[in-house]
Amino acid sequence: MHPKALLDACAELVRLTLTFEHPADAMVSRFFRDNRGLGPRERATLAETVYTVLRKKLLFDHLAPSGYGPKERRLAILGFAHSQDEYARRANASVEHGPRDFLKSALTDQEKNWLDQCDTIKPDDLMERHRHNLPEWLVQPLKDQVGAGFWPLVESLAQSAPLDLRVNTLKEKRAEVQKELAQAAIKSVATPYSPWGLRIEGKPALTKLPAFTRGAIEVQDEGSQLLALLLDAKRGEMVVDFCAGAGGKTLAIGASMRNTGRLYAFDVSGHRLDALKPRLARSGLSNVHPAAIAHERDERVKRLAGKIDRVLVDAPCSGLGTLRRNPDLKWRQTPKAVQELTAKQSAILASAARLLKAGGRLVYATCSILPEENEAIAEAFSAAHPDFELQDAGQLLAQLKVDGAQALCSGGESGTGYLRLWPHLHQTDGFFAAVWTRKR
Image (cartoon, rainbow, N blue to C red; front, top):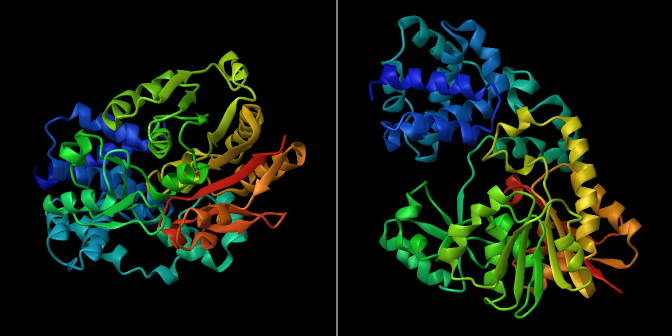
């Protein structure tokens, strides 16, 4: 595609995305469907430009007024330039030629001069808000939690996330899949914590790989894999994935059960559960039973009360632990929306707890980094349910032979550890999990 046409397309996609009427990934996918003539490189450039604008929105909003032309074009120029600079940095290549030359061939002389002037601005000369690129309501809660780790966290959130795979251990061994990927010129390393995970370089076309089509691999962040591992579902048990969504954790749990027992995948969205069907077919699992429920007090839930060995509640949340993948969330979420979510999280957790039999295990998890969605929910549940005993997540993971398990956890008010994953510390999405055992 001609550089000017590609930049115009970038500007249009930026304009559409910044309406925030739909999630960024949905908007990008729709744009690609409406413009099927785009090749893989053009799609990659468009997506990275838009996501860079979302990650650095406050900085670009600060720089854009000194430029020329429509604002979405100015933002697209900055996003294009910064995304290509980051690509060159990761590849340890010069940013003076190649992508920058391609971009500048689409610019007017005024725009070139403006972009060069923007490049001379040093980060230390910027206001704090233009460096962290976070909404103000989110800044202090993060500083309170991570202290001196705030700026390393900010830096990690400004990067794109690595691509993690989960090996379906029902079908394959991790080492064998790693060799197969290497034969396809895809480099990978074993994830440091999950025994099922591989982290790969770049973004290859995984769906075309034999390992994918036969169900040997699934895309899944290592942190998400650890949630399924923490549930530690056994052969022959009755297990519920209470907020299953598209079923990534369901499939991991089913494999750990060695395709025995009975695994219910509940969700209030039948549409999300539909996305599980092709994945389930590839997985080789026959012990999974998806079921759409009307709400957390659905009759299907009541009929199973006191009968279940293990329950995972991966609750609907703000998703702010996934900002590397979904940077639009920081602009689409609000304190009011989070407050509404916490009420829903408490209700779902209380209902799910009724499913457990004596001795059963309950795991509450989110992909949020906010304490009101995490520790506050767990501590309120413990106080209201004395028949549930909080377990130390670090000890449980250590028993499962997870290296450095205690470093993945933080203590609650009781001193018992919660799983607490951070992008800048663990190279996973931000995750939280609390674990209880029902005493009676």
